[in-house]
Image 1 (tube, rainbow, N blue to C red):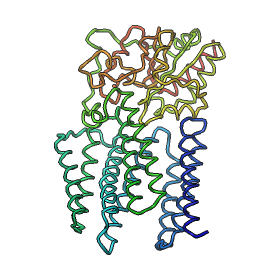
Image 2 (image 1 turned 30 degrees about the vertical axis):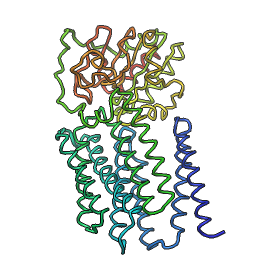
Image 3 (image 1 turned 180 degrees about the horizontal axis):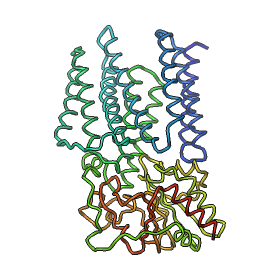
Image 4 (image 1 turned 45 degrees about the vertical axis):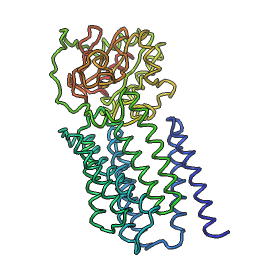
Length: 457
């Protein structure tokens, strides 16, 4: 068996592990093992690639691997769950940036004019990789709240940047070997990535992250075609396909098109005044003791987690509360909105970390029919995804977005630090509903106080 045959066999094993690992990521119970399986597949793919003839300077490769391990492992191990979306955005940006750099190196290193079947994928990889790199970095800055101001640019500007990048690519493909044109492609594509993401509000960030993830995968697959690297093609297509499907599902969950997410700028306006809605009314505060009584004598309690739970790291306290209530015969379920948090599956990951049984986590379509029989909905930092304005206010920036129907339950308890608005920057009429009571304070401390009161009953 030749070296080429061995490498092909290793690639087949790696691809199989990629697919198995991806399938295992569908649920929290198998997600950790799925990541491990996919990581083994990637290690095999990398080893097979390095075993090919003509591999470059081994010392430089070893240095790159060492730097990557030194930066990546401590970062991944130390990052808080609240910052995981930012970490995902950064890692995704690194992937897009790597593809763009590969495109630059291959274009410059070729001693002869590249054939079109290599040049066209390389140009595609350069454009999409650059968009993904710069867009992901802007997403990181917005998620980290280092960039608060939304800068709107006319759609014609973004369109002009895209046309510029494509036109320059056509010129290069037609026979120009100008390195300057290639750098201009990267520059225009990078500017497009920045200007496309800057106006987008935090409420739409889960869709943005999954879209940029798909872009990175597609650019990697294109680079694989240019380099004739089977591992890069398959891995890139898996990431691109799964990211595209997730993007479509997330946009559908918000009842919006992907174009609307990128061009409408939801959540970019200034926060609205924190007065009561036009119908009047005031927010009613409550105490941990009163909440404990309500919960203890309920038949069904639905916990609605949001970013506030993630910030406070309250998931284990919430799980402890559920355990205490279930000892008293109370049924406890968890309502998971597709865009709750800052990335797809954010709430699922947090609750799985707290050993909440997976069958207790109910997706929006499954749980909305249960709110009519719910005695108490316990909303923990979930603002925009419970806002009735999405159903009743045509002028609202979230109008038309499907929400969790917590206002249909008999009673609502909202845990928040203050009356501040959510990431969409608008007030929530739910807070002024007569059936709603507000428990102010840090979510973790508030839930811990409720647990103590329940135990004392």
